[in-house]
Image 1 (cartoon, helix red, strand yellow):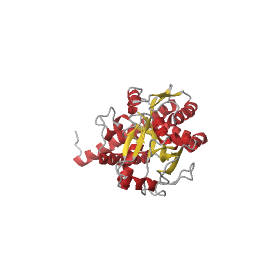
Image 2 (tube, rainbow, N blue to C red; image 1 turned 90 degrees about the vertical axis):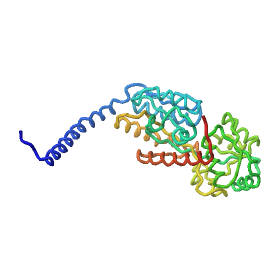
Image 3 (tube, rainbow, N blue to C red; image 1 turned 60 degrees about the horizontal axis):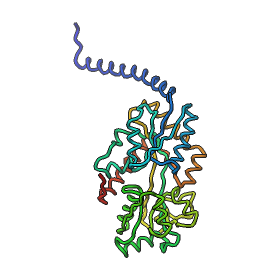
Length: 337
């Protein structure tokens, strides 16, 4: 048998490997396209950690209705509130792995909880594949309508004059408001007391009655009391004013720290390992639904800002948000079991 020189054998092997790869790709691409054309083949379940009737749930139901028409299959929203979102995440992890079970997640589930909890019943890097980014919900600085505070600068001045004596509230440990106010104290050199309420309704009622001097909250949550004249907005924790609230200044404009931003954001994720074509179909169809006029109108009403990112931008955004949350949590020494 004739022996080829070693260099020639290597070259022939590389050419053969390339040929195999090309043949494989020629079969896999049509197969994936076929998978995407057939998907979904049954009802799609969108699991959400939010209770029925809230702003995130409302948006989820509008999207589900649009996707149902687009996909020719029912898309149902299944509410699994409570337990820091772990109840919903557990249901998702036990669900279908082919994309027929999706989950709506908050920023804390993806970027904060991995550093907040000693033991987490999920791994964002292994259990989720973010398909679409939905919105950012910037936080308003909220005070009672009768408050002595007229600007964020007034809050800073009072907190500096009375270290540790000014209360602010939120609905849990480690939520966007809590972490945002920790960052606020760091940037302003102040010390305030965190008061935790069981429910957001109790929290904002406490502000309206004057029991609590200051907090933050999304426009979607606080606007009923704001429009009723029971609370005032000192500022929005965003880089620029919201189009729905043009008279509300940014924190920087209201005498607070520059470049201060507090928001919650929302994504829809699928299990890891979906065929690329199916994953792209989900991403594109959700993006199309989000771009529709009725969804955009609801965003504006709720003070949401559309967060439309492609896959590369999504990865970069989540990495940056994860590092930001990690820094706040470690600096404030916040930890939960």
